[in-house]
Length: 178
Image (cartoon, rainbow, N blue to C red):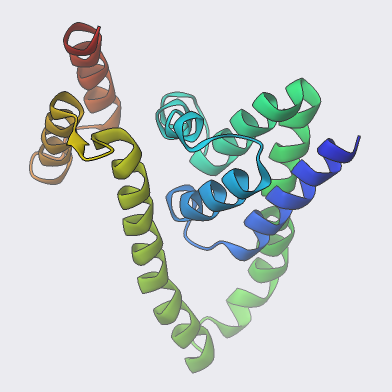
């Protein structure tokens, strides 16, 4: 029971103090989960691909994955509710006030400050994930590095759908990494 409460509390804090969506939450999820001992860094490397290929928001999928690994179905439920509850409550409160104050300098300033934070947190997630996937010790894993670069080019330059990129790169991974 203590582990379930810990999972709920841990993900409630992540949900309450993270801005910018699932990718921006990933660094905090990685740090918190690794620090708690629920999962190792290697196990967390699987979190992002699994969170992307399953339907739903990345943060909710990540919380569900961690919770399931740590506490089975009840752990998954506690983690999922924990990460989603703050956003649910906050969006109800914010939406009731935002229409009244959307032109306020303070509100505009807050959003102007949150946007770059979000970009920085997403960049941090890329670095954290990149370290565990592309680099092993002092050795660069060539195939994952090439998959990363090609995926980046397909998304950034050619605007290919993330679903198509995921399917293509998964197929390449099956053949190149098996």
